[in-house]
Every structure is written in C-alpha cells, then in structure tokens.
Amino acid sequence: MSFRIALAAAGLFALAACGAPSPDQRPDAPSAAAPRPLLTADQIETGQPRPPAPPEPAPAEGAPLPAYAPDPGMVRLQILLDRSRFSPGVIDGLGGENTRQAIAAWRKAEGLGEGDTADADLLQRLAAADAGRVMTRYVLTAADVAGPFSPPPGADLAATARAGTNYTSARERLAERFHMTEPLLQGLNPGVDFRRPGQTIVVPAVTNTPLVGVARIVVDKTERSARAYDESGALLAFYPATIGSTERPAPSGTVTVVGVAPEPDYTYDPERVSYDRGDARIVVPAGPNNPVGSVWIDLSRDTYGIHGSPDPSKIGKTASNGCVRLTNWDAEQLAAGVKPGVTVRFI
Image 1: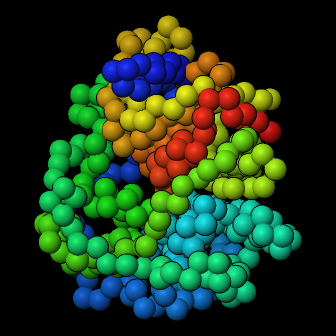
Image 2 (image 1 turned 30 degrees about the vertical axis):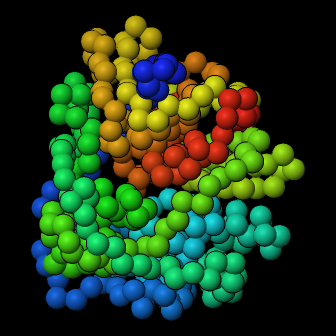
C-alpha cells in the first residue's frame, strides 16, 4: 500500500493504497414494506439485554441464515456506549466481539474491574451517566435523499474511480449518519421509502460529543482496537479497528500524528506497492465509500495512517493493508481530537 498526504491550501487529500474491504451489495431501492417494525422506540428505551445465549453449532453449508432479530436492550446499550465514546462499532442490536470489548474498556475506565457482559447492572450504570433518551425522530430532508449516488465499490479500483465513491443510496447515508446498520434502520422504519423527503423516521439519538485532550493513542493489534488517552493516562475513547493483514502487517513501536486529511483521495501507486491491483497508477476520488473512508490521520511512518471505511459492518472482522481502519464516524471523532505530535503506539 502507498499513502501520501498533501496538506495544501487548496485542500487536504490522501494519496493512498490501503486496500479496500470486499463490499456487500447494497440496493438503492427500499426493502419490501413490513406490517410492523422489528422494534419500537419504546421497546428500546426500556429494553434490557438478553442473557447470553449458548453458542450454536455452525450452520450447514448452504443452509439459510437465521432471521434478523435485533435485541432492543442491546440497541439501547450500544447507543449508550457510542455516546460515551466507547464505540461498539456499528449499532446493530446483535452485539458481538466489538460490543464486548467496548464494555470491557468502559468498565475499566470507570474503575469497575474486569468483565464484558451486557447485563442490567451495566445498563443501569451507563444510563445513570447519560439519562437522555436513546431514540429520536428525524424528518427526511431533500438533501438526505438527493444524489448523486454511486454503485457499491468493488475490487476493481479503476472502475470505482470512474463510478465515484458516493453513498449507494439515501438509506446507506442515513444509516451511517446514525451509526447503525441498514437492516436495523429498515427494521425500525418498515415501508419507508428513503428516496422521498418529508417522512419521519425513528433513529438512534447519537451525539457528536467532542473528543478533547488526546495525548496518545494505543493501537492494539491483538485486540483490534484503538484507544485514546489524555496526559494523565485516563482513557478517553475506545474504538474497534481493523488492523493490518498477514501480507502487510501494521507496524510496531511508536510513531506520531503528522496531520489530518478530511475527505481524502486514494491513490494506488504500483511503483511503491503492489497487491494485485495491476500496473497502472489509479486515483480514486474522495467520498464516504472511498477505500480509506471519509478521513485520513497521517502517521510519521510512510504509507501508514488511521482512516475510515466504506463498510462499517466489517470493522474488526476483516484485514486491512497495513493501516488502522475505523468506522467513518469513529475516525472523524478521533481525527477532530488529535493534532500533530500526538504519539501512536502499536502493540
């Protein structure tokens, strides 16, 4: 991979070659209308996480996947974690490793000892620290539903560069704005045509609490996380991350933040790196579905950075070509809280 950041008066952009994850196909049209929502706002506001279920055997090859059944208590818990800057990644109502790690980090930061279980006591403590409602209503605007939209990004960088890296649909744009998966957004709002403004939808009441006082960042390659600390060593934020790969592992040791490039371009330069993307230099334009997402935090180790992602659901679950990939909203929050000289330690 190859990255070069030009921090110029004309704008900030990244010339990059961090590889893109394999995309899922996202339809532009709304899903078929459902008679009732999967969850209601009231169920989420009062929900308690379900007890952990025993592990189930892997389904047989070719067997249908189980129906999507989000847990209202888990949605509530994930929203509260997200608002406290201990990110579960994407809010999906299902939990998983990213959510468990966020719970463990929050408990440790609060002096509550070890543990990663989503239970009523944890939820009560989180709610006591943040008493606001976790769900809200939002009216679709003309800007929300306006294009241009782009096809889902694929492995062919040249094709992606030609087609653009905008959102694939208004539904994808709204899901990312509210830190959630598209299935959860659709499940909360069955029958909504996300291409039509003026409709009222139910969404998580996420916030954009500024991250201030970041003195150092620790990237844990084993845990697949990035943690931000202040000068005193207090943990300010936790983010699940995709970090490196077998072919191109993340670095070790300590580097520093050089600068931040919002809305970066992405450049594959075969003269610097190669990972089966051909012999031609390719520049993919900026956009939320750019291979490096919506923001790039440039590090002092050449070609490495912390950046966003075109597919938030895969954070912590897939490989990255050497860099540190977060959800776009987590990367934007971290980028807004750092400055040149902040140390980044890889462990």
